[in-house]
Image (cartoon, rainbow, N blue to C red; front, top):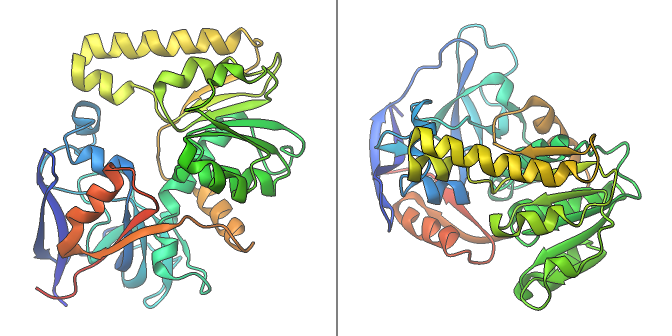
Length: 346
């Protein structure tokens, strides 16, 4: 096969403006490998980037100029080896992530740095694996931001906002496996799922305010809404580990207000929340988490996959030609993850 099939987002807007296109098959550069994809996923950030979200800051990485090939999760088979790449051989089945850039994972073939890949476990189907690397890596960075590790999480009380989403679900599974006690914040529709995943307590945010919880938590993670950020931080106890969020307004502030005013607004919001965290103790950590490939996170994902049960539910699996359905599924916050299967023919 001499061409690569791509699901390209050709212009910013909503509904997403997607086309299946053909391009020349790329040659791997130094320490890169060519991977033929079995499956990829559509994450919430992909649906937002399809509208032009993050155009200012991501533009510095050439990741905001349309047409864009979105996506970060990859599962597939190595088909080519670049100069200096020694970790993989043709035919190896791999799972991993791509950094955010102009050429993402929504393609039949992708180039990936050899260090951003791991051996795909045979027991996991491609569709299930495709939902995990980006989300797990982001979660891992958030956990590291507050100082939570498998070695010392046992017995700690952790509060999770947005617990019924992908990040929240993985956080409940991982933290309970580490022996932490998790309190989940979610909507009424997610209460049962959070309990089934192992949450000790669940707060239905539509029935009770977050402020009704006691300030007893060792750490907090916000994967839900920025409007709840201050309330969640306020549930930390004195001397807590810290708080991390993935829903900070950095990209949106720059988009809406421009470089100077946007940066000043984001800095003011960061300082306001940092002051709230510091009120719990001078050593309490505060982290705004931003995805990036991380070798430690990929190693941890492989370790976690050795224990049965780590997974995210899949709500939709479609071919590239129906990619718009996957983006709309994610943007509509419908149950389960959205998985894309690369188109094999024109």
